[in-house]
Structures are given as structure tokens and as C-alpha cells.
Image 1: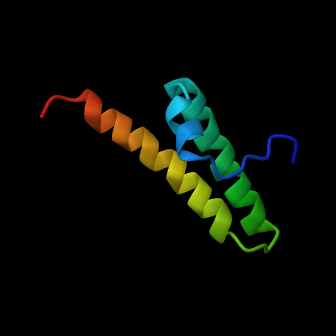
Image 2: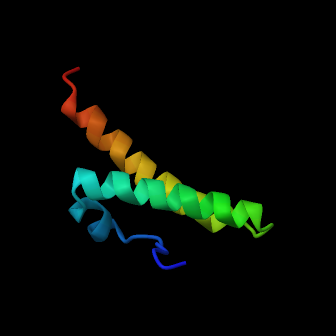
Length: 66
């Protein structure tokens, strides 16, 4: 896959803009579904997706007053 993404390091993750983070969430989910459709192991793909998704959730949480 041309846009294959891998597990980011912590520094790479926090350096991403919100827009790039959203883009990578979409790519990670797409890679997950593709692997699932092909009968491949999806463990690593789901971990990558969750790392990006959790970072976005953390940022959204910090932006809202509590």
C-alpha cells in the first residue's frame, strides 16, 4: 500500500498537527479494514489506529473546559 503508516514514536505523535492526525486515523482504519478483508492478522493495525485515535481524544479533552 502506498500510504502505509507504521506505529509512531511518542515524539512523532505529539508533533503531528490535528489535521494530519485526523488524516492518519483514516489511513490506519483503512489499513485495518484492508487487512481484515484479506484475512490477515489485524492486531498491529488496530494498535496503530488506537494510538492515533487516543491522541486525538486526548487533545479534544484538553481543549474543553472542565
